Length: 144
Figure (cartoon, one colour):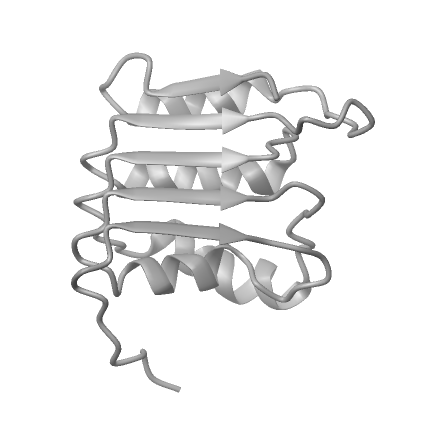
């Protein structure tokens, strides 16, 4: 398989609302975003959704995300709606902090539903992700 030949030059805002069940994961989103050279804003709604990591993701796609070159140089604002402190949501956060060189704000918005269970934050990993970027106050947590 080869990379798609599509290019969305005029796309400046990308919104995706993920619903279960889905086979979409961070790799799919990253590959699409590389085809959008003028993208400024990204919104990922994961309310009621978790990326269910499978063996293919773990062994083939995650290393590509971690070691790959994703030139997302124009993205300034990212929001993740429905953030529940899952480790794979931290992968999303790390991906944008590492690859979006123009990133000014990364908003992590908790689910609005009080019934949604939030996991205990992984403060060590969050601190490591914050250390990747020289910008202070880049990551902001917001109550839903």
